[in-house]
Image (cartoon, rainbow, N blue to C red; front, side, top):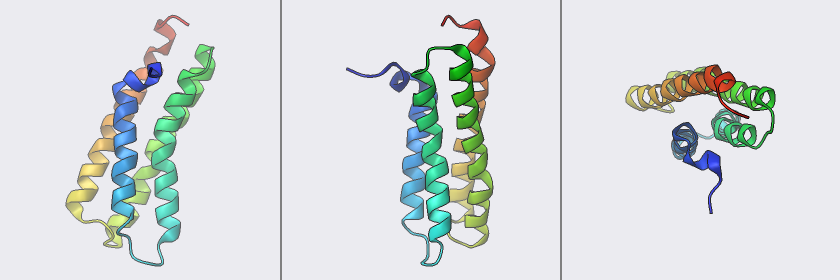
Length: 120
C-alpha cells in the first residue's frame, strides 16, 4: 500500500533531488559540515513538507505546507551557489541540480495555485 502523495510527480522529483544532494555532499571537503547539513536539511524538507501537507485536512493547511516546501526549494539555491563557488561541486553538477530545483519549484507553484480548485 502506498500513500497518495507518493504518486505525485513533484513528490517523486523532490525525493530524487534530496537523494542527489546527499550523494553530492558526501564528497564535500572537510570543514564544510555546516553547508552539508543545511543543504541536506533544505533538500529533504521539500519532500517532507509535500508529504505533511497531503496529510492535512483543510486546504489552508495543505497550502501552507506546500508553500513551506517551495521555500525550502528556494533555500537550496544560495547553498548550491556557495558549493559551486567553493569548488565543492562543478558547474555542470550545479546547473543540473539547479535545473531540478526550478522544475520542482514550478510544480509546487502549480500545486499551490491550483489548491483552491480542488475538492477537500
